Amino acid sequence: MSKPIQTIKAGGVQASVWENEKEFDGKQIMVKSFTLDRRYKDKEEWKSTNSFNLNDIAKIDAVLAELKRVLLLKAEEGDNNSSS
Image 1 (cartoon, one colour):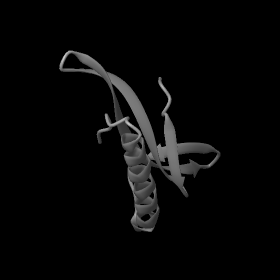
Image 2 (cartoon, one colour):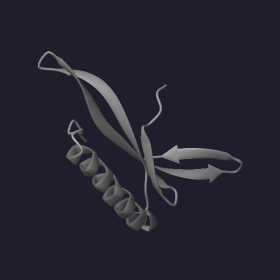
Image 3 (cartoon, rainbow, N blue to C red):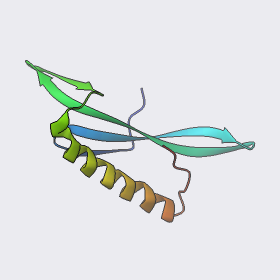
């Protein structure tokens, strides 16, 4: 399994940025996508879920704001193949 190119965290909430090569109009391009999840510890084991609660909203906002900043910065640097 491939690894994310970047991970942004706020508490247990994290966004992972992924980069995949796709064909578009006969050309190979790099496309960015992201996943959003919450990490938590169940006894001694770390797990993740895509289910959130009210207390996670501020953390989600912080993660998404940083994610947007990072992806837009990369696009401005000439890497404008990002998608959500």
